Amino acid sequence: MSTATTRLNKPWLLKTLISAVVLVGFGLYGLYDATVAYPARGMRFASFQQYQYLEAAKANNQLDSRAVENRLSVADPVGELARIRALDRGRYTPLDAPRRDWLEALETVGKLSSDQTKIGDATVLHAELTKEWTRADGGSVAAPKPLSWYDIPVQWVFVAIGFGVGGYLFLLFANVARQKYHWEEPTQTLHLPDANTLTPADIEDFDKRKWDKYLIFLKIKPTHATLGGRELKLDLYRYTPLEEWVLAMEKTAFPERAEESDSGIAGSETAAEPTAPS
Image 1 (cartoon, rainbow, N blue to C red):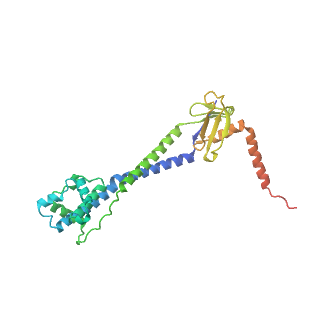
Image 2: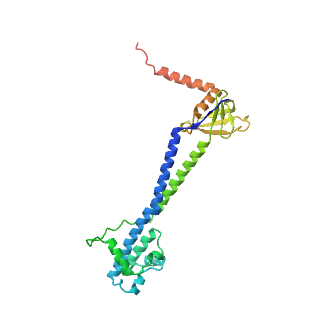
Image 3: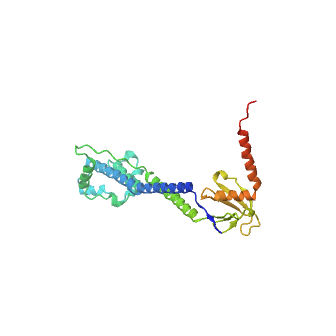
């Protein structure tokens, strides 16, 4: 006996796949910002702050002596930043504030380590940074926009949302696509994806409490061999023409409902007809 098979409902299919693609794209964009764009921007700002630090050292005549140059390096940047933050600002040395700003810029991008704060030849480094942060006419280059402490973490939240929800939608699509309903028209037998079968005589009630959400709940009679007493939820939006088959079964199982529906429609049409003027 030939049987018909459900196919994915095109509106659901497009909605699900488009949403999944958009969300994964959103996650990829967040990943790029978190790993490339924002760290690059943060390191550029740290470079500017290091330039300000060396400028302060030069202004205080602490850039020439090699012994002093060694003190411009920060062997323990985490400890040094904690020390400066604990100080009353009135007790800052001329280099404490610019050193704090440099270290905080590195901290924001997760680069607060001794390999980033080691300064070999301060005069050479100062010359390089001066070339980078001054214009040909001698003016200063505008300071880059600093990162906020939450900028990079927020991008990772976007990554989690995009990949998490988008991945879920792709898995949902795959799961729905592999499930099929089959229909034997002459006997009105519905074959479920789990290999169980239903006929109108097996169903005690067709519960449409969530019909507006394209859901129907089938209450199975206790006499059914495998599904007796259970309630099955069918999503009619995902599969077509599943709704048509279920309504055909309901009409067979409860013909009075179909008659009430038909009479209601007919009554509405009669009431809508205009009366002839007397």
